Length: 103
Image (cartoon, rainbow, N blue to C red; front, side, top):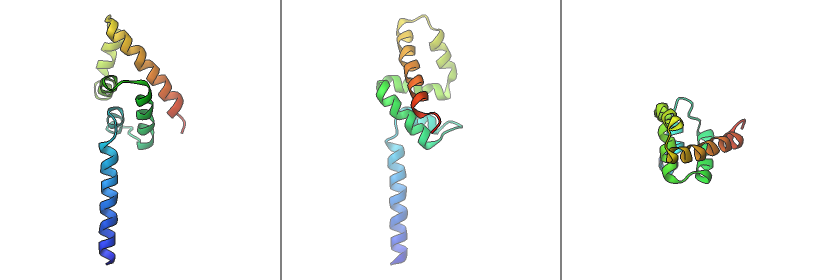
């Protein structure tokens, strides 16, 4: 009986961890995969992303974690679409820093 309870507890834990990773947004997944991936910090950053960025912007910003050269190329781009994205991205970054830093 005790062993069945231990197994059930383990299964519930694994399912809850799996569910939280599966429901993580693109920014949180990229953050968790980075060298400094801290679950609480990454979750906070994702919450800010959900408030400030559309899904396509989140996916684009998440790609910067593994390809920082993409961020630089976007920043120096002469495209009005890239400029508009960069304004939204800066707002996201500033808001995330103010909301999530120091916790």
